Amino acid sequence: MCTTTPTQTARRVAGASCGNNSSNSVVEIGFEISNGNFYSLLEICFNEVTYDSLYSKNIMPPEIDGRQTTLPDPDFFKDDTFYPPNLDLDYAYSVEGQTAAVAQAVGSASLAGEYISGLNVLQEGRLTSKRDNIYGLHQLVNAWYLNLAPQWDPIKDGNWDILQGATRQLAEDFSYDLIVYTGTHGTTTLADVNGIEKPIYIAYDESGNGLVRVPEFFWRIVYDPITQRGVAFVTINNPYISTPGSDFYLCPDVCNQIPWVVWDTNDFTKGYSYCCEVNALAPFVEEIPPLTVSGLLTGV
Image (tube, rainbow, N blue to C red):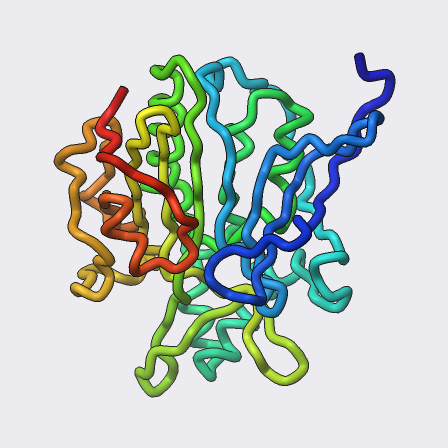
């Protein structure tokens, strides 16, 4: 029985790496317990040079429908153990900050103002959603910047939100826990004043190097550890792409075999999305951790 409220914390896992890059660390976010143990709720793959969160891993229980829903959203939390003190992430995610960063990339404040306008602003996209934890105290860990990546607002509230809800609904139909990996890949580009595509970040260091990329893709893998079935999903994180070319399709689309996710395909600003065999996507997304997958997770 707890006599005090546990304190949420994050720690690097000694000797662990991820994402096929020596600059990446495995970070656990959870709670220090009074008996000295650590109760981990989220596992994050984090790049220590560019400060990109590459994926999160969480457990999705069948009881997720009973989650607490009345708690207000906490403020986002930055731990200077993982970020330099002069990297102001609150400012970087603000409309003013992201507009300034886009202006630096495209070479024009007025053009940046056209990109960052109306509903087309970048939001703090949670890899693991607050709604993916049952208890209110557990939901606090999802507000760490380690669990965030820049995501365009209409996509975050569009097809990505549909996928998150469908994942929870699927979990409710199981009698045991599912494992969910949610990650990012690549860097979104926007055309500069000369029509040349430039990579987009929300911050820069003193040398002009981009920090905290705006991902080109968000991906998710839903994995059944008992049957070893899995399915991967990909959403293009760019509301300005009305007709994606073949280079945006990282693997063959198998959505016709996944009845439990129904995308909105009528509005491209909500994010072009598709479904993949895990083993078909993994060779093209180095951030995906090794998994033994025996088949496609078409349902329960």
